[in-house]
Image 1 (tube, rainbow, N blue to C red):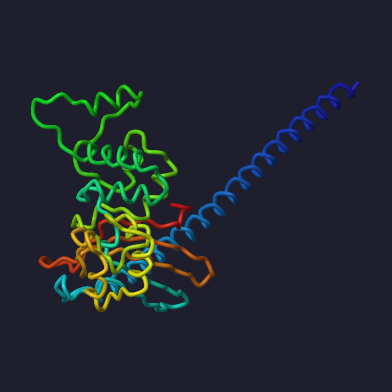
Image 2 (tube, helix red, strand yellow):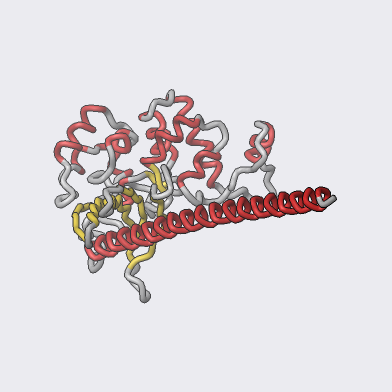
Length: 298
């Protein structure tokens, strides 16, 4: 007569057991989530700490670069240099060059722009056309004139118009109508918006930039590369001929520093920073552009 009550008790015990198992499973899941959270937080904290450390080391490289450029006028300012140093367990290497080594997208005349594109593989007629489009991008539209350049962008199916104002960065070259992507990629290491002059510094320029000069030939480029000396910037001027008007030797207030940081863990980070020396004000220099590969390729 007591069997039904006994079965009811067994049923209640079974229900409680299932509930306990569900609670244990939920607690286990919660513990797993919390453990994952703690692990992720620790990894994020380490990454953030490494990022802060890297930025501090890059800044140290900039400080020492600025120290080597301050206190000169443009005629005597060093146009390049290199040095290494250590902080704690990290090693830092710095190479800096005057930004005069690059062609200024906002100031360079058409022959220099066209010459660079031709030196990088564009056909002469195409190089001239591309140079025209670069100049059109940076040129302000006259008041009341028909905006043919903007119409050309619209006709090409682009959803933006040319800036018709100075380039804000060299990467903006990718937006110029009709320029092949591969040609832009090849040109970016040789152009800037920070030179400050229409002319280039022949003693720091890459061979591709020297080849872009008017009336230049491979033999003259080779002679310039062999004889030039940043410590004696006048040494190669006699080789330039008609290209002399496109050259302005001597330092610039703006320099580009390639900074290579090797952390104590062995990880290597590369940074490319443009800085300008300030003659007035509280800060001895100002950073104009900063890129690094801490979070991946730039």
